Length: 125
Image (tube, rainbow, N blue to C red; front, side):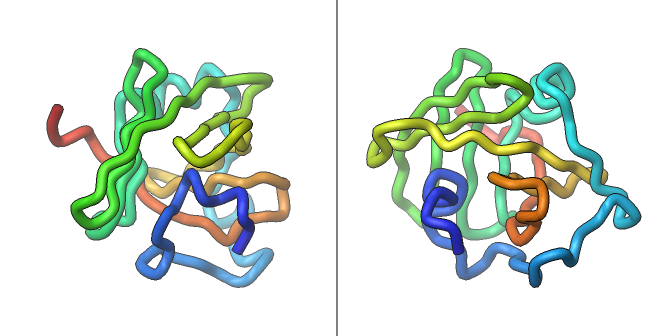
């Protein structure tokens, strides 16, 4: 796993990880531009639907939860990429955002398709 996915997934055991090249455009994944990222991801949660989530608040705050641990970071959209930082990172990691329905893949490189999660409506504060 990429060290830079630490923002996206603090605990990755429950995340769907696929072999490189497993997801392609024919699987319905489409890379989003910055405007699409803002419309489809901001204000929602990226999650594995059971163990961890990241809520991208509209004000640029990133709220992560893993089991009962909560952390905060920041996010921004820069050059059509979703850039996120956590309390332990000095600089943000910037990802291409690919989506198919409610499934999301955050990719540091276009061929990096091993991280897949889902987008859900935010459930609370």
